[in-house]
Amino acid sequence: MAQTSPNVTIIQQADLTALNTLGVKAKAEKLIEISSIDQLHSLFDSGFFESENPFILGGGSNVLLKKDISRPVLKIDLDGVEIKFEDEKSVIIFAAAGVNWHSLVEWAVQRDFGGIENLALIPGTVGAAPIQNIGAYGVELKDVLISTLYFDTITGEEKTLQNDECEFAYRDSIFKNRLKGKAIVTGIRLRLTKAPHSINSSYRSLSEYLENREISDPTIKDVFEAVVAIRKSKLPDPKLIGNAGSFFKNPVVTAKLYKTLVEKFGDIPGYKISEKEVKIPAGWLIEKAGWKGNRVGKVGTYENQALVLVNHGGATGEELWSHALTIQKSVSKKFGIELAPEVNIVE
Ligand SMILES: Cc1cc2nc3c(=O)[nH]c(=O)nc-3n(C[C@H](O)[C@H](O)[C@H](O)COP(=O)(O)OP(=O)(O)OC[C@H]3O[C@@H](n4cnc5c(N)ncnc54)[C@H](O)[C@@H]3O)c2cc1C
Image (cartoon, rainbow, N blue to C red; front, side, top):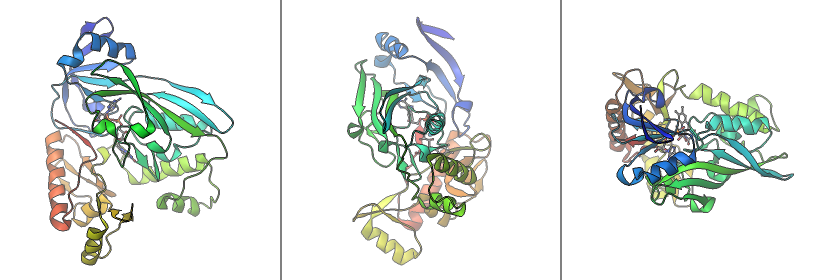
């Protein structure tokens, strides 16, 4: 270990195996754990951001580390959740970037604050949530987010972007584009509801789950429990088998192309997102290309969900990436659709 400035400690040759849910064995030449915004200011004042291009790490649940990382890794451990304002209908909360996302959802549901119960059990940190505008079961972060607070690594200032300035889209935001490498998210503000809540249970598997249990007027706790149960039955637990959730984004194609695909492949599912565009489940495409549950050496796809690439143990980042490329090519050959990774590929 070495000190760069009074309050920043650098861990040399840090093992990242336990810090990425794919369980890839990789090292960071330098790892710096950030637990206060003052530390970011200290780094800025020392010229760190001018000379280095650090990689920002949260819970490591949406990254594929292709190899050892020579850039310094800043692991964001900023902690704390606060109620900033409340009235009889809603509550505004602040959550720091290092807070575990699912713990925040539990915190909210325990207090009967609604809005994020559909996003239960998404691994990772609060700070990464706006990066790809996390979403599940019919809800996205953008539906409840008021603003994102970040540290500008170019100017050293603490800044705030309002929801409409975050350029949120499907698994996308300004932080993956224009502000990539320039912003460290330090926290988010959310507006959550007080009862009576507007419950979002129309997503098919969620409504079926509730119907099967004869829950006709679900509470946010019912939705939370349903989402947790469904996710546990469908998705592999990274503690048991390395994975990063959905590896690819669901492709969006023109309505015209979708019509041609239906003519050719019959039962191809599609969700209309506008008059001109249709979203196709990437998992279906990968499954139909013959990859569901397939294993090649130490890598493969999950037996219950082809969209999830898995590390059966000891796979390298290069092996996982090479398998992802093989799947990508195979889907392109069969359907003429190019899958784009949802997971962040770290060189
Ligand atoms: C089993 C499983 C299920 C999943 N299900 C879903 C799902 O339903 N919906 C969904 O949207 N996602 C899902 N994911 C993906 C993942 O959980 C989310 O993308 C999550 O937000 C990543 O958080 P993280 O802290 O682990 O980010 P990391 O993997 O550490 O980082 C992801 C990206 O964000 C950047 N980043 C992280 N923190 C910050 C910060 N503070 N400031 C700036 N940049 C930062 C990193 O540089 C990297 O580019 C799933 C993953 C797994 C393993």
